[in-house]
Length: 129
Image (cartoon, rainbow, N blue to C red; front, side, top):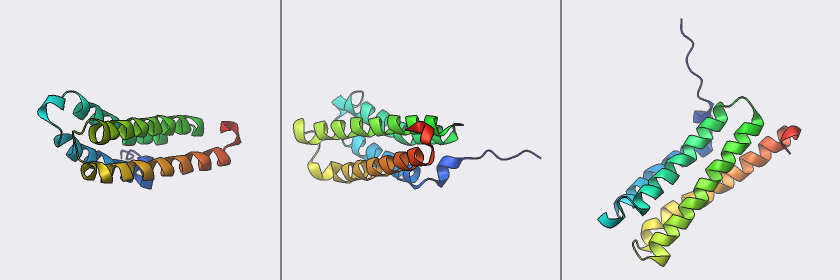
């Protein structure tokens, strides 16, 4: 009998939150004007998809150091999202602050969760210091 593929990322709360962020970002991106369909809307979606994807890829790796590295990439994608959402609302006026509020809150929460997970992983694996 075939052994089922183990998906360790699905056990991580931070991955689930990142999936919720993706859903929220897709809704926000759909509110942007048609002129931004291939600009900011596309960038928002790509950065959002990168977050849970990198968490999943890192969790599937064979070493703690690699997992920590992929969590760093996910954190970088969150910084991109924060910047893009700020551009859309505060700087370019393409969206009202209310439209991006939930997404920005999720970005902040997930960033804190990733930082905590990275610290925990580093503490448990001295070679990753």
